[in-house]
Length: 413
Ligand code: JFZ
Image (tube, rainbow, N blue to C red; front, top):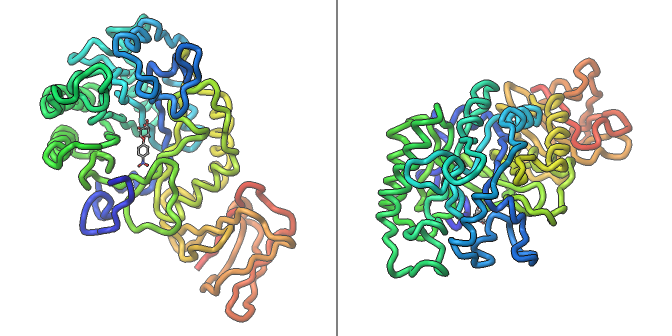
């Protein structure tokens, strides 16, 4: 994919026709969780700050397997509380959650029979956090997905990526796919109830046969389970944008932007570059107005705590959504595209106009539309005055910005 969204609509991922994606097309907003042993070094190795994203520290610092493995004995996230994480997702207005079952470092957050390099067998914590999360998600009605690094595995001798412990020429990558990845994917799809998404990533050199084999495996075990387009070779149920990338215009595919709130996925103690809640609310509206979904990441600490700046921003998004969710969930891209500072979504004969920067005097000038009435989504009791001026529709809103983050005006057709 490289990882541009494919625009050939005859091909998956993302052809927008598969009814298995109906729930996902309406959901729009999910929580991504990158959590693993890398939360312990948190970006620092041997007192040296390692540049780049936190979960890549093993590769960036070329840490030998024998050294990195020792982190497992120190992984004891005593403050982990599945219910608290899921409740945060819920308060944020997120409809699904995707967590790293196995990232590139190879460590498994679930009890796997295929390896002892997992949270139950190798850590003092000994709890299967995926099981606890699956139960919490069931209770709260949040769909659960698992991120699984199918190609890169820096711990497994036959996985891709580790050339400092292993000789690339000796690797049996196909054996790793069939004898390790496949049975682990089977575990993930048979031990944790209904799984909404398997989020494969960084396909690199995986072959079409291997991608197809994994796609078929997932669909054979759980036909409703969606597979993210980062499976590779153009296969998967929906397309994935580049990390943090929002396309410039509407994209007529099923697509998702995975994104960070700061600049890392896995927790880094020195990354304080948090986007504002306002920026995140804009990004959500921007993505949804172009037909996509927003998978927004948190990177819990080694203790099992979601960093407070993330909590605050997610709660602010949830407060905005509690008032304005109708303009996001279940909508489709609106008729006005490409107008600076404005985004539109639509549903059931209504256009939702998202106004990022409220204009001086509250006068909104739009291209002509067959609109009968207009009101603020936050205040349906008050009809806004409308007039036509040339080929413009002019709506007179309150002079002061009703919502400093994003005011939604409902236009009835
Ligand atoms: C991958 C991972 O390597 C990373 O650790 C994280 O899990 C992220 C969500 O996904 O990183 C990528 C994958 C694809 C692109 C960029 C980073 N891309 O297409 O631009």
